[in-house]
Length: 221
Length: 106
Image (spheres, rainbow over the protein chains, first blue to last red):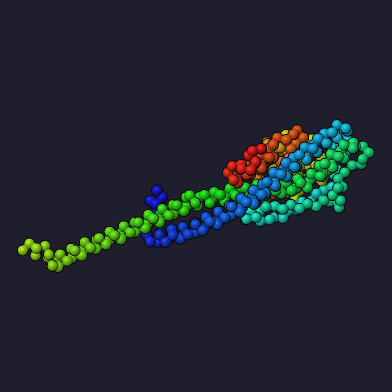
């Protein structure tokens, strides 16, 4: 029993009542937050899964193309071809706040104006398979960036939901019942004290009346 | 300005260099760990990491899971898909909901 530590005073009772009101309101708010987070999370995670499947399939295809390209030319030639990339991707990030969770929003900019300017080599010494391989990888890049954004958001939101859920549960199953129990204990204890002091007063009154009028002696006559 | 880094064995990631992403080929787990920690410190915005590489860096990756950057995203390597990326998404659902209610069947 948690009630053994509380001091049964009126001040403590007032304090506990205030605590109960705060805890109840906090519980309601956190529950709303959890529900809304969960709703958004489920939408996001579905999108995440779809994107991931798409990206993984795309990378798998690109890898296959690269293996074929590699088979068609020497290792040295391949390394030379890809050594000095023409294109660069600049990543800038802004934050978006979803139900108190900061999630990143990525924005990319390619260095050259034409995003398709990806071939960092002359076409003379490389196999045509390499062109296809690089192209297939370039096609999947926007989805990969989108995936990074959603997956990170999902991870952050999952962590926040877990935290919120624990808080809701702690309030619902520990703090609130415990406080109610303590309030009950104090109320009963105070009532009991009041009754006992009333009885004491009645007893004292009897004794004083007996002293003044000597009822018992009179009865004896 | 953030970087987009790709981490993994050379064969799996060399193609990304052509797209303008920064590739960091690594040969062994120690090198991978060192490179990963350096990238995370240098505030790389996104780190794409091959599933094989991520498997040995699980502990380090988990540390950055609740931070805004870097976003560590697993990609399949040249040796095929281990399903670790999909598992990661399922784990998120499990963490949030308590059990996997969305993708449990596949």
